[in-house]
Amino acid sequence: MEQYIKVNEDYFENEDLKGCEILLMSMLEDRMESSIQRPEFFDKKMGDYFVIYTREELSKKLGLNLGTITNMFKKLVNKGYLVIKHQFNGASKLFLPRF
Image 1 (tube, rainbow, N blue to C red):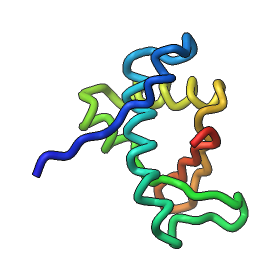
Image 2: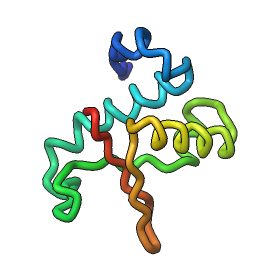
Image 3: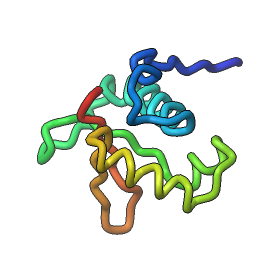
């Protein structure tokens, strides 16, 4: 079965985001679409839904090394597109404030 993700066209108008960052945000937003339909992906402390997407999984899908994914995460956090909450013994929760 073929699966597609949609890309927010506004990202191309935004000079803050570059090609791979646009693709990464699109992948996170695609996963968020399913998260908002599942109550276990709602964080009461943050009062918002979150996504679980490991750096390793993104690295494999995008064909980029882990350092590049980490740097992209840092840029997206600094630009306000992403909030990361690290979990003890678990995958980090990724929040998309602009979703």
